[in-house]
Image (cartoon, rainbow, N blue to C red):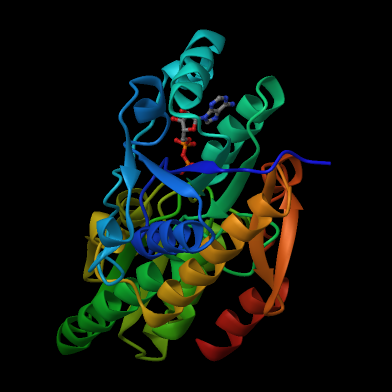
Length: 327
Ligand code: ADP
């Protein structure tokens, strides 16, 4: 029989993503609804180690559901990789009487939570909060929808100016290890080519397709590249294209951090609210060391050790669709 939780901590960790605030709000309000005490931990695992922990009330999360970023701040903590750091973090949690933890973050944050909960008797529940959508065990991650819509809006604008000047634009979007933002935003904006880390980039094929389009006088060309593509980001790709196709008027646009910010979309607010609610419910049911996800519109629990291992796969069909629709 699992111990009943009475005081829970919540933190946001790793890279921030729009919608994290909605998840924090849901955790705090669901916890209070059930009579739990809820503690906010600032700057992820750093705040756990530095004892930057404070009691939250229902009103602490008023007026944040629509705000990007995270009121609890995000950080990366080197000390949490060390046993000594995790020991201090545990002692700090204990000093507040915290007996359950909700970690909102990406796979790195879950790796930390897994290590911590294997060493200490504090059950951890993960909520996938990452713009990259690269975590197995959930069809959605908080922040992806907002990030990809920001990218679409920006690329649409680039397309207008590309069209006016018959230019070839290489647009770089975020995604060091995952190509979801590139794939979805590229398809949604009618990009001619999409280069992502999950598939081998064939430069010859890219050059051939651009040359062939040039011959057909299809002059507006958009190439969307994820920053983690094996050839490098937009600058590296543009360099190759300029050498091989010197007549093309080639420009680069790097969207950068605008993709992380902004007011979360309705979808991100909804999934954050749903996951935050279920994270608290599952702690109360005695679950531990699982990630709360949504699969086929149903709640799904994935053990943290599996969530950190597997990645979401990119369907080959999508890549075929890109080729056919851009012809
Ligand atoms: P994300 O959660 O966005 O993937 P990171 O990979 O930067 O972000 O991880 C966030 C934090 O989680 C790290 O700064 C570190 O404190 C903690 N962490 C990540 N991996 C481990 C690990 N193997 N052991 C202990 N802590 C870890």
